[in-house]
Amino acid sequence: MMAGVGGGNDFQWCFSQVKGAIDEDVAEADIISTVEFNYSGELLATGDKGGRVVIFQREQESKNRPPSRGEYNVYSTFQSHEPEFDYLKSLEIEEKINKIRWLPQQNAAHFLLSTNDKTIKLWKISERDKRAEGYNLKDEDGRLRDPFRITSLRVPVLMPMDLMVEASPRRIFANAHTYHINSISVNSDYETYLSADDLRINLWHLEITDRSFNIVDIKPANMEELTEVITAAECHPHQCNVFVYSSSKGTIRLCDMRAAALCDRHSKFFEEPEDPSSRSFFSEIISSISDVKFSHSGRYMMTRDYLSVKVWDLNMENRPVETYQVHEYLRSKLCSLYENDCIFDKFECCWNGSDSAIMTGSYNNFFRMFDRNTRRDITLEASRENSKPRAMLKPRKVCTGGKRKKDEISVDSLDFNKKILHTAWHPKENVIAVAATNNLYIFQDKIN
Amino acid sequence: MSSDNQDTETHSEQVDETQESQDTNSNPVRSEEAKLKAKYPSLGQKPGGSDFLMKRLQKGQKYFDSGDYNMAKAKMKNKQLPAAAGPDKNIVTGDHIPTPQDLPQRKSSLVTSKLAG
Image 1 (cartoon, rainbow over the protein chains, first blue to last red):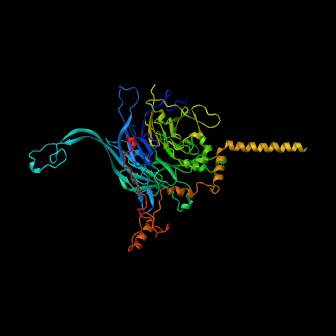
Image 2 (image 1 turned 90 degrees about the vertical axis):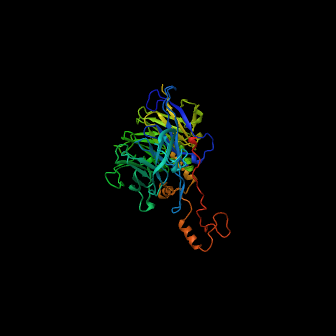
Image 3 (image 1 turned 120 degrees about the vertical axis):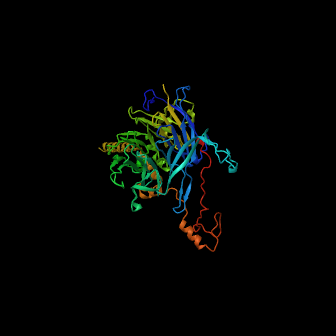
């Protein structure tokens, strides 16, 4: 039993919570499109296709309950983006939240960036648990008092009130992207951030909305010469001058903003040489990188393509240092996956807090975890059938041919509509959030 | 001897066939590719070409030409604007200029997310 994935020895993933509707009819708007923990892990944000953001907060651990960690409860929810139509370009702008990225906390309020295809917004989420009472010019219910009736002055007093969590848009960064935004990433200087679309990457200052610097532009002069697009981008976690971007051709470019204002020339170019004998019609499509993430240490980066996850050492450009197969059995299904467009699904990937394990999603509501030290891997399922509190998750196995053992599932029985594209790992603990279409699952380790 | 030759030929044929099936077995992608080409013979060789990528860039495009619309509005200053919806005998499909009212209105979700419920 491959149970020891995630950094511990006696380690077991257990169901903790599931959020969302149970009914079979999934409204398009309810499909979760992004999941992100904040820097402390206290808050967990989700965005959906309907343009809404829901933030969960972890409750304080209670000493009385059995040693299971705090649960996540709704903290705030708001409409981040609305659908728009660009009449000039004849373009429908979806309200779907493509990415959410938290800013590090600097005061009592929390800040996050959320983006759809065209516009990035900075949201402030703040708490209010006091209100002033005893105003001079108005009554408690807000009615204005007759100034001629006021005979004495009083000082308003702050009184406690029920906690109110307010979300307000503090900055709107618009009109800087001709193509569809796929990534945003906050820089380690906590002052700037980058946004990337299919052909360009822009650098913003968090305080300035009417100006943005273009730092990468791969649009060819003649669009007929277009050979690749940008698929993801991220700032280095410590070096504020370094960022990477991945392409639809399976390459990653690392750029240094100190080298030039326009980083069209990369500092490093990461590409695994292709085996010419394995070249096929599908090669380029399945090599397209759907996500790139730096390790917390900043020494490695991870890329996700259709069938695998690769870990790269930033000091070695010619091949990854580790390759993990996510669902190799899909190789014999590429024809139908091309026909039903599943081959274009964009899976994300994530590191655990210590960079010892990585996680990514698959089909049939399966998700995979790989322990980089032990080289063990595990397949788990996000399912309501296994949703009793603190129920242990049983490893799943896909049977690739021949005799199917009991409890195994055959490749042909996989549900390709149940995709896990978005997962997140708590920055410090073994708590994970897995988005399964319109449901959000939270799993935790069981302390032995 | 002829019988020996026949045996040799048959043997080499068998070897070829075994190798072919081994190729398909060891490379399932090849057989998938063959399947796809059989279904769609007109499919180009390189899927990563500019046409393919440009389609990707144009996600969300809807038929509405603001130039056409504004010119039609200007021409029809003295006449009535084309009817917003519904069949109209006088308008032939293809000459019909879509108006903003023709485009399906997309309203944001006014309902709170079920995750927060």
